[in-house]
Each structure stands twice: as structure tokens, then as C-alpha cells.
Image 1 (cartoon, rainbow over the protein chains, first blue to last red):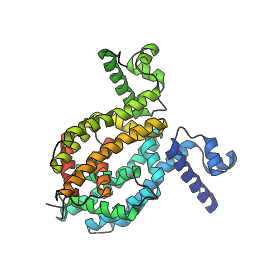
Image 2: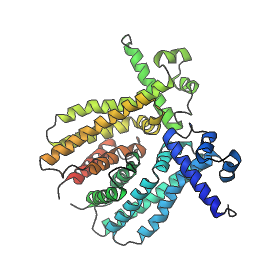
Image 3: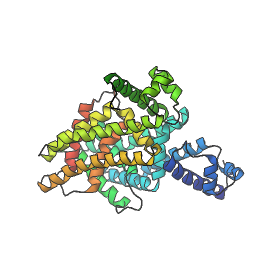
Image 4: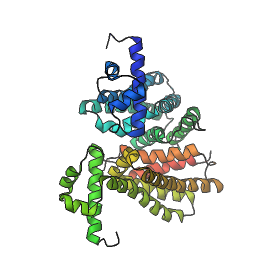
Amino acid sequence: MSADTKDDRSQRARIVKVAARLFAERGYHAVGIAELQNAVQLGRGALYHHIRSKDDLLYDIAREYIADLNDLAVTAEHEPDPRKRICILGQHLISMIASHQAELTVCFREVQSLTDSRRAEVLALHTRYERVWKDAFISGAEQGLFRPYDPVVLKGVLGMYFYSYLWMRPDGSLGAETISERFNEMALRMLAIG
Amino acid sequence: MSADTKDDRSQRARIVKVAARLFAERGYHAVGIAELQNAVQLGRGALYHHIRSKDDLLYDIAREYIADLNDLAVTAEHEPDPRKRICILGQHLISMIASHQAELTVCFREVQSLTDSRRAEVLALHTRYERVWKDAFISGAEQGLFRPYDPVVLKGVLGMYFYSYLWMRPDGSLGAETISERFNEMALRMLAIG
């Protein structure tokens, strides 16, 4: 891939985006390569210059947003106040869900369609991301700000955020900023002592 | 269907259960009728005595648990204390998710594979169920027990519960009772004034 030009990369990103939307709307198995060609307005040869297979597309769709979330999490980890860290993580997460709703839909729906090693890789990225939240919860507990760490609280908080891929409307009256502010406040309520 | 015997109904329920597990494990489109026949140990004729098509099975899988949740919600609606009502709803919901994890997986993953009218029916059942929670939130706000009704809080609370279909392990160390108790406590924290 080192010989890829910048144009190649942006074409590829465009194809992945269109494929995510099609797979989210109609299901991964229901969308054929001919339909994808048509949607991205490329001939078969040009399309296969950018992607190797439909399976590769699914892998990219399922992997990229969670890999990006892990990259973003690094900035949050520098924040020493666990309450602020959770607000940064929550804001990044809702912003990513809002801009990658089709990708999340495809990932949650089709993760079992990935090959074993790719599925394991995607799930490991989710586990790594969850670990960043867990560390913030534990750090808050150690500083006497949060209740003792409880895995059910972790799952509940993450569920609140992640589930929004199912109901968030990009053009809805509730913007991503509003949703993340309220969810962050709710997450801190769930964690607070007393 | 009025001529169905009790044996027919229990056979049909068994087929729906096995189909839900197979569809959850391998995907609706990946499972053929021959595989289903094999799993339920019935010949083609006997299987088609109980079900009309794979599409019918998907419809039953996606519809029954949410129809049952709506039926259960009627008992919760008799509870005048909105805090207790939420605890009853939460306990029913987690108990249903624990016992119907495959069905929820299939429904969340394959709802777009249903025909338009059936999808609309299943989504309407979800909307009706959400309405019961919403009424409890509004009732609590009117009684001065909860914060003013906020649709983001409703979505967040329901997300916390529903998302558990993805991580709950039937044989895990966390039982449904423990999960619903903690989630109920978290939901009440999210709703509490102050």
C-alpha cells in the first residue's frame, strides 16, 4: 500500500463510505459488487484497483471507526481528572457515532460475517477501547470521586452511548453536542458517590 | 391457525427458538432451510407443516419478545409509584433479554430484512414499549420525583438496558437479577432531581 497516491487514498475512503451506507441500508449480503460499482460510478476494473473484495470493504468499515476512537482516546488519557476524561471520551464517542452511523450499523450487524482473524481483531479493538473507559472509572474511584469500580456500571454507561447509533438522526433536532453533553452528565451521575 | 393443537404450538415454539439461535450465530442469510431441518430434526414436509417460510420465522423471532414485553408492561402500568414502575419494567426487560438473547440479536441485526409492513409492525411495537417508559418518566416528573422529561435521558436509559443483549452471558458470573438491580439503581440516579 506504500505506493498509494493521495488520490488513491481519498478514492478508497469514498468507496468505503458509500459501501457503508449501502450495507447499512440494505444489508451486507444483499448488496452486490455491480450495485456498488453503480453507486460509486466506477467500472469494475477501477473499483478493483481500490478494493480487493467485498469482504475487505466490510473489514475496513468495521475496523476504521474503532481504530480511530482508540487513537482519539490517547488524547483523553493525558487528562488527569477522571471526570473531565470521561467527558472527553463521551464527546469523541458521540461525535464518531454521529459521523459514522452507517459504519457502526454495519459493524454491529455484520461482525459475524468477518473471517475469524478479522473478527478477533475488531473485537480486540473494542476491548482496548473499553479498557480506556475502565481505567478512567478506576482512576476516579481511587481518587475518591467515583464509586468503587463495577463492571455493570461500565457496560451500562457504554451501552447508553453506543446504542445511540440506532436512534440518532444526523438531521434531527438533537445535535451530537447536545447528546454528548447530556450523556456525559448522566454518566457522571451514575458514577458519583452517594 | 385456530386448528393448531397444543403439540403444534410447542413444536413451532421449539423451531422458532432453534432458528433464532442459528440466525444469531451465523446470520439469517447464511442459514438455509436444509440446515434448519437438520437442527430441528424434522423432514422438509414436517418442518413446513409448522412454518410457511424462513421470512415467517424471522418475523416471529423479531416480533414475539417485544410483543411479550408489551404484554408484561401492562402489569407495570398498574404501579402508581413511577420509581417502582421503572424497577418492574427494568427487571422484566433484563429478564427478557437474558432469556431471548438470540431473538434480540436477530431482531437488531435483521430488522431491515423484514418486508416493509412487517418491519413497520415490529418498529411500532418497539415505539409502543418505549412509550410505557416515557409515561413513567413523565409521571415521575409530574409528581416532583424526577427531572423534567428529556428524550435524551429516555434514550440513554433504554440504551443502557437494551445494549446488554450484546454483552450478557447466560452462564456468566453476573445473573439477570444482579444486572437489573444495578441498572434500575442507575436509571433512578439518571432521573433523580439535583
